[in-house]
Image (cartoon, rainbow, N blue to C red):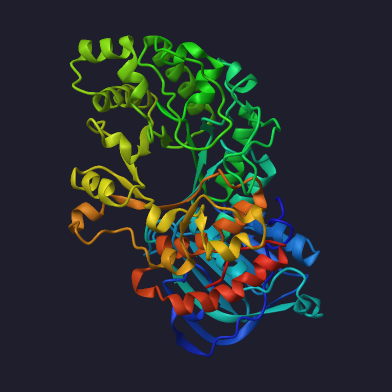
Length: 544
């Protein structure tokens, strides 16, 4: 079990709640639990504590045991059985008959011990995350008590509201090492987030190892220079790049799965493809004047798009075949955003395809490409998801839309009976400034962002069910996802500064009942959760 980003995963100690029923917001947990009820007494976790688990929760028990060993310096005894509560024990079990949604759990802390019952193994794991947050940070002096740390008696019943609670990380602009990816996954698990959207290809870099097309990483993974912080139109003259081997990707997938996080890879089609076209120029519109593809050194929307050739479709199918063999996720993200049509307009070949297929414009040409890609994924038992531009020219039959240019694309898609993930720039773009840009830039050029302004309260205010949709249409909203785009994210530290605590605010919307949302109470709980951030050496953004 890897440690939780330089420090925090586990400690358990005093949770001071008056006897009797309490509002869930009173419990210092983010996302806020659905229901909490306190009673008298407390349980002390000492060196003789036993972890009891049923067969289904054996993996979660191992994770918990590793955490206790790391934080307490002791190795708790592990006992398999039915997961029932015993004296001096932390008991874990799965009960599929529990009257909660998938991912739900009941956690009872009493004088004799702790009993965690999950609707499924995810529920057991999420209960553990609540227990983590009820604890003081690692290194707290209360751990030095001779008879162990105390946990006040409380019962929590909890379940998620939405099934898709995600974070997107763009590593196409700036490559981040695998260990940084894992640290982010641990923090996502801390707040019960369950989808990691891994943006692996861009104009400025290709990050997924293809064994069939090795030049994608030999050439496409590297650029000659990058814009430095503080001058986005300049060039630092430093080569930058990197990529993840297929084995490294499988390792990340396995690491995430243990934390009940699904990794959804993104391979951009047909735009944001400069790195791929620079690697294999025949993939591009090579019949237009001045065609000279390169891995891009500057940010912004680039004109290079894949050409609608049969050779290109073979390449796409080959790469997606490799992707599907590495990533077991039900969804595969194909981008589809910001694909300029200028090259297709100039390309005699592209125009010929349009005439042959009876396509009236270049938007329909993009739709033609996306529909063929969807067929490739359907054949492999996967589902296509793309940004809301995939609606232009006609939406593929079974596509899922990620709405980012406001909510309208998501609204229209839900009305058509198709699934939606909400990520509007107005509330879900964590690469925007979270405090006044002048005050941020006064700290140094490394605090530069792409622009915009998205403070914590605005993130928290969002709810992804547009009221213009009826109840049946609202069921098509799978959930929501925060975006950490990479133009101004050179490091893990910058990603976490921009991502948190805004990701915590988003997590509460995705998990907690709408009736439990209260911003003032959220910030009070966040002040306590911030102690975990600080203990881990994590510098996050403003707490209000």
